[in-house]
Length: 463
Image (cartoon, rainbow, N blue to C red):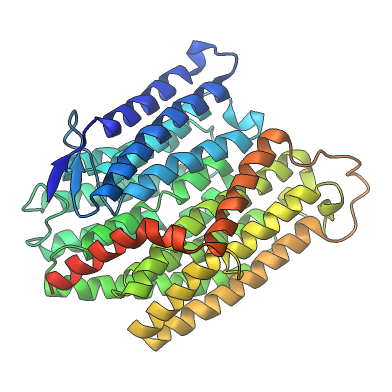
C-alpha cells in the first residue's frame, strides 16, 4: 500500500546533505567546516526523524516523498535512514582535525548522501544512482592518496557495476516487486552483495581499507550495510524458488566469513587489522539473521545491525584517537598501558567492544540471543557457528584491549590527553545507546517490530 508523506521530509533531508557537501568544500574557506557539516547533518537527522515518525504511524505503508517520488520511507528502511546520519555526525565530532581537512568532510557527506539515497530508493534507478554515489569519495581521492585506494575503488566500482548489470535484467522498474526476476539477475545481485559486504573470499579489500585507509570514512562505508539492505529487500518479496536456495548459500557464506575472520584474528598483532577482523566477522551475523526466515532470527539481525553500527563506530573512533596521540599504537611491540593516561577512552573502548560481542546488560546481548535462537531453529550448525565466532571475537577484542590499555606505560609516552569534550560526549552517547537498549530491550524491539513483521509476512505470503 503506497501513500505520500504529508511534507517532503526526504527531499529536504537530502537537500540539507547536498548543502553540507557544498559548504564543506575548501573553496568556501570556512573557519569552522566541521561545525557547518554537523549543522547540515542535524537538519537532515530532523527531517529523517519526522519521516520515521510518519512511518511508525502507518507501518504497513510505503510513504513516497511528494516532491521526489523516487524516494520513499517504509518500515524496513526508516530506522537505518535515521541512524546512519547520526553515526556520521558522531564520527565527524570525534575525528582528529587532520582527518577533516581538505575534501574529507565533503567526501564524508557525499558518502552519507549516497547511502541515504539507497536506503530511501523507491525504484531501481534511484538505487543505482545512490550506489554509484557512495563510490565517488574513494574513487576521486577525497580522503587522500592512501595505500588502499586502488583496491577499495576497484571493489566499490565492481559492486556497483554488478548491481547495474543486474538491474538491466529486471522486468519491473520497482525494487519492491521481484516476482519475475531472471536467475542471472539474482546471481549478479548477490555477487554485488558479496563484493560490497566483503564476504569470504572477497574480504581482502575491507581488511586493506581498515589497515591502510582513512578510519572514520572506512567506518561509515562499513556501517552502511547496503548488502544487508539488498538481501532484506529480496527476502521480503516474491522470488523464484531457486532464489531462496541461492540466498541460503549466501547465509552459509556469511557464516563462513564470520568463522574465518574470527580465526584469522587470533594470529594478528596490529590493532587496525585485529579490529578489522572482529568488525567484519560480527557484521556477517546480520546476513545470517536476515536469512533465518523466522521471527527471532530476523529481529536479531535487525537489532545486530544497530549494535554493529554504533559499537564499531565507537571502537574505530577510539583507535584513531589513540593513533594520533601515540605513534606506537600503529604497530606496538608490547602492551602500551594507555589506561593510565586515558581511563575514559579505555572504559568507552571496553564497553563498546563487549557490547559488540553480546555482553549481558547491553543491546548486543539481546541481539545475539535472538540471533542464536533464530539460527538454531533454522539449522543447528548455524547456531554453533555463530556461538563459536562470537567466542573467538571476544578473545580478539580482549587481546586488543590488553595491547592498547593494559601493561606498563612506555617511557616515551609522557603525557597524553584523555577524551576531549568533543570526543567524550559522542562516545558517551554511543555507550548510553548500547546500554539503554540492553536494559530496556523493548525500545529497540519496538523500533524494528513492524519491519520484522512486514519482512516475514511478505516472505511467507509469496512462498
